[in-house]
Length: 313
Ligand code: C5P
Image (cartoon, rainbow, N blue to C red; front, side, top):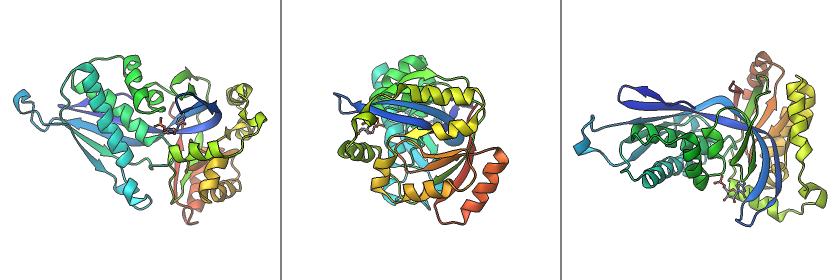
């Protein structure tokens, strides 16, 4: 994510992510869970803009405000949740940065939402990372990305990932990043069903389910095996090695996960999976044209919003 100066304003495209692998290693003393997850940024973007409505007058600086433009999401999201996660996180992130840096927060944010909310695609976290980057520039704070990451992790486990560049294995709460550089360009069909899922709710369900001793063991070889398949260009093998430990918990909360997995398993893809804590599911496609043709077939099936995307390179 690279902020761009546009006149006196600042803008950034905030990408979504897909989790190609997600293991939950166990609960932590702080109430969170230790994870091992492979996250890939994809070319589906929210856009965040910071501007100065006072026209540059330091005397009449406006207090911080946010407008969310979410028309693309309106048809498929629970109204109560429309933009609210992102809204809270954008404003909270910018205010927290101002507090740490000892400046007054000011100016207007405009957030153009295209990433579905409560989908497991990280839209709210990406927006928060975008807010930190824009406010850092607009307010002349000049913190490094590492410094911004220490603020980010207080606000959400996935936000440090969006401050880094490219794919990464994320551990700990999700904030300890190991960059991954060997991935080929990947093409996906993503389906967001009409029902979203809250991350806290899915983790709560995961805790309630009986997890066998084998399942609760750290599965450290798994993500490395998956990366090995990708680096050798063996995408069919990679498709069988993708894994999401939260999927059965999410499936216990909504029938959409099973429905989408079944539908996606029939489209000739290399593999299919739920992303993050859901509720969107994706398929790893053979090519961009395969993705386009399958998305066309899926669009009329009443499964939710269908989109194609590919990994950021
Ligand atoms: O950090 P984030 O705001 O994304 O987390 C939302 C919720 O998901 C947390 O309150 C927690 O219940 C759960 N969570 C967790 N372990 C993680 C990340 C999230 O238990 N590593």
